[in-house]
Picture (cartoon, rainbow, N blue to C red):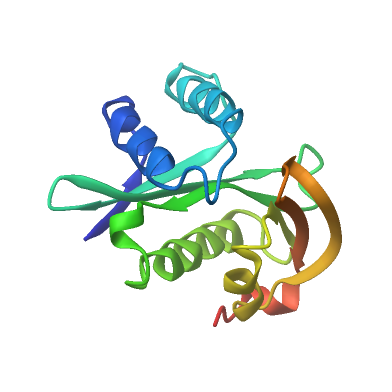
Length: 159
């Protein structure tokens, strides 16, 4: 298993990972947003998102990224997912740790923010993130938004 930067050839594998998590983790309308992000990342100079894939025996097992806020006062985790066939194997934790280490290299001492659902927030909570706000039915009926933050002190040792 290896973690590496996203390449345009990974597009179909990332879409498969997304689709494997529908409708439980992602609403239908979010697929177009994710496709747009992947297209922007592939375009020269098209995105400020750092995006990575986990590849296992030629298959995209997970993908996720982060971006820096324009003022570089914080970083945000974006579009993280593990393909359903690879859930509960520690891949998500490895990819989260990888992203937090990259953020620490580029922007030491900044908070990391994210938004996720009630289904995934416990995963991030175990790694030191805390909930700052909950918005019911934000993504779709039954899919609430959990805004979370990892303070700079918590970045040094994800659980």
